[in-house]
Length: 523
Image (tube, rainbow, N blue to C red):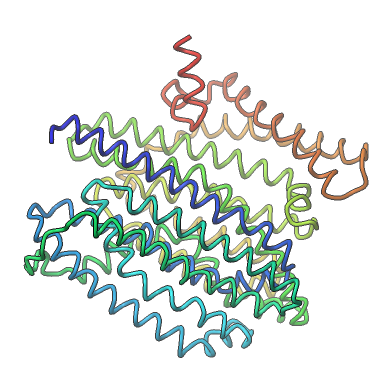
């Protein structure tokens, strides 16, 4: 295969995987809106208490480990040795996965008690079965990605989400019609995880059978494979699951913190269910930036391998600055329109300030992901692992105290503080690679544009609300959102153009807008 044809294969595979990742993440975020509307705040609370366990398991099987395994596969030249490597990794990951499965199965009562709700035990046991599928999903996805064949990962990713989302919504609808309690609904929803995982595994093994793979050489290609999986693979998994780790802390400490704040158990359940809406909005907000970062990583890695330092610098600066700007615009828009967005999606506009504050984690998470993208392209993992671990520990230490002291908004504050700690440590430890990526002058200009946008959009939304074309409710909120979002987007881009926030290179790097600009330029 020539270099040109191989490059085309890599680009086509990256594009396919990016599209599949976008679709899967979009489905994973959007279904929660109808699900919450069907099951209510308490039903949503039950589901979200256990969701981080599912999310971490699937993130490991879907992105973290496959990416790590693909890097190992690329380094092995002999096809028989590649198969041997896959089987060795399967054994190691199976050992770890069975351990997690047994922990969740037999420790479900203890874990539920630690979450201050013993009735969550069957929900935990239901989700545990998916961990038995993870070793086979992750290893074969990683193998094919290392072969530059992205189809098994892309197709299985979409199949998994379509099956899971369909099962959750259908089972929730059935359960609500039959007046099932929230814990039964949560258990049914979590049963979707192993069912969807099994469907994804069938899809992957279809490609394994068709590929007519060579026999294993049984050679030990890497002597310290377990250590590499634990540290290098673990770092990639930590980055992919950074928000899920912080949500897991919330699962263990928010309800007990609210009880200490003075609320009853039923009130704490209800408040936690409303607070969990913020995670849906953050996941929606991260869809575009995550897809953009995923698409940029191969180009950065290629530039680093070829020692093209100037190209690497331009690519890293452009992607960090563009994704930071997009995430800031999303967070600012969510903050100023939160009452109407909250009411439109979830029927009641409750805890607007708490959810709006939490949504600024979109900006901080984007910085972490883009910083990691640059470090990962350099093959530098230690700063990211250390930073995420420390940020997680900080959130773990302060979360319950902040909730018990200030109420539910303390959980949002603890999340932001944990993310800020991660960014600070990454920047401190890896300043050689990261110090030049964000331009202070550009940041000031961008902040000025966003403040002006927030003032205008916020005033306009209040004006439309006060006119009261319809009774307060979803229709009124829909009108506000439909009017204000296009005006906000227009103001943002017009302000960026007037203040020259972006360079030409950065304008062309903005997702979707770049295609429009290229068409205009061609005409």
